[in-house]
Amino acid sequence: MRKISISDLQSLIKKIDHKNNSIDKYFYKLTEEVGELAQSIRKDKRLQDSESIKGTVEEELYDVLYYVICLANMYDINLEECMFLKEKLNAEKYNRKSIFDSEDIK
Image 1 (cartoon, helix red, strand yellow):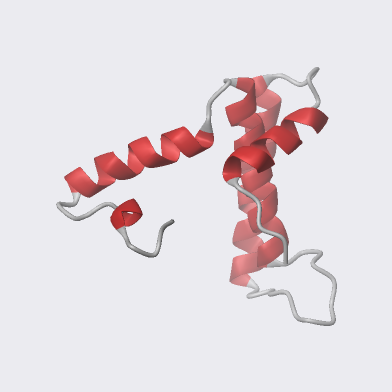
Image 2 (tube, rainbow, N blue to C red):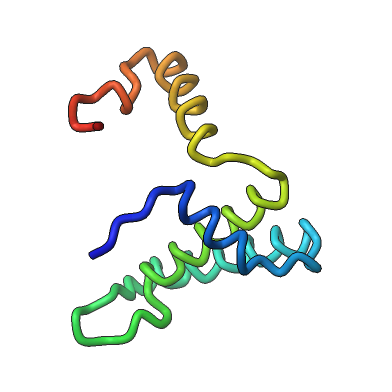
């Protein structure tokens, strides 16, 4: 399976963003997708090897991620940069090491 960074995904989505949509439309789509994710989780509808992704937790998680990225693009926010800044705050708040201090991270 291909690996892709958050920044690369953000750039790819930016190329196909519907620039004529407003921020509130993207936010409404995000909340709609969160609702669909909740339904998939409640039904425990998971992707199986031989079935379609349609209606699964996996599909809805990606849809949520897609609209989060669209909103970040509209605000011109670099999500990878935010990820590190927010994790630093979380580590301080919960008095723990940052997850990015792990030796598993290269």
